[in-house]
Image (cartoon, one colour):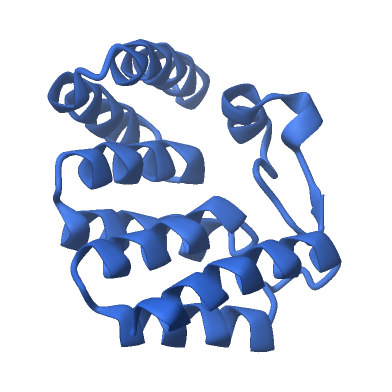
Length: 154
């Protein structure tokens, strides 16, 4: 299978996973997202979607791992940072959530001008064109709100 065909098939699997996720059938969504990751491992959004399914299934470690891998591929994914913090909070690891958010706020992503919801064409298909970029100031403000919340939970 060629690369373009693999991405096309992965997009179809991701879309099917999104449908299952919306129906709250998280196990099946996880399976579909995992297949998309296998076909197109360089698309950060597939890992981020799989992380969301892990989160909903209570699989916090796997959620964090997928978010970190998505960030390795696309360092500006705001949702990945938020999801990592949420997973730490769900595990009762409030200090880890605070530490993660503090480090992100102190050292913005590799592209300091924006955090992105979707910075690749495949990711834009997931999040929509209008959600493609969040100004860094706004993203930091959102992260600071999450940091304040996590700090209060300590």
